[in-house]
Amino acid sequence: PREHVRRWITDLGLTEDRIVAVARDSRSTHPNPPDGPRALDRAMERAARSAEARKPADGDKRSKRGNKPADARRASMDEIADFYAGLVNGDGYLPSNAISNTVRNAMLERGLVTTERLRERGVA
Picture 1 (tube, rainbow, N blue to C red):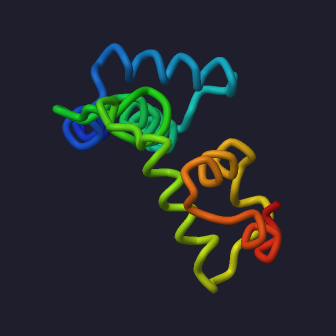
Picture 2 (cartoon, rainbow, N blue to C red):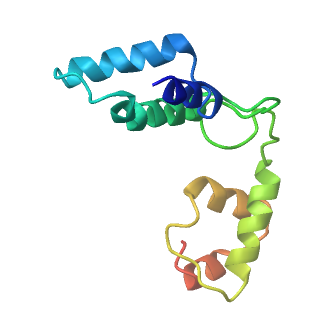
């Protein structure tokens, strides 16, 4: 039993309080006592994985949502319009729903594309 607890602490990074809490939760969902500490290995591994997923890495500047860094620069409308104008004016595949009305209007206002080219590409 001591070897299991040592592994949960050293290898999985769980605290003694967390081990007791996981064991208590396991006992509430499985009323019959487990057959020794080996029966709790999987529950402890799940607890370590969920704690690892919630904890940001040291120096990680990522926001709570998504995977972009919190201080990432957003593209300006000029850059977005220029990017999509390249797709419209090119010959590659362009899904009809790839360009929003806002981006379409921005490309037209800036003179990057023509309405005829938009119609040819199925964006109009």
